Image (tube, rainbow, N blue to C red; front, top):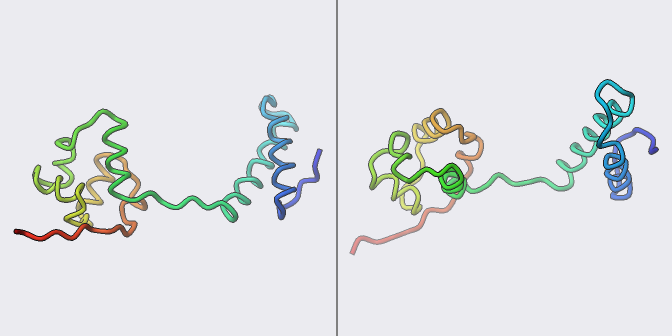
Length: 127
């Protein structure tokens, strides 16, 4: 059993993960379960500092969302606008507006903090 203290090194981190694995089946309400909760919190804090996960690209997040839920681009029209507007947004020719972000969040539950991330628009010329 490791001493409960902040995780400061990679060795501390690995030791905490090992103990979490050993405690994984702890019964609720037991000291072992309490220890598991504390270790999990310490590991989470360490991972946030040392292994941060960047927010996904907003357009990729929208595409993933509709694909994973069996929706089509047409299902996005109430939140984004016309069929052509949806195509422009998904093809990165039109930026998401604040209103679109709010509607995508409210209607589909896509996290607003993901949708507000900067992303690159594709430049195209009308020829």
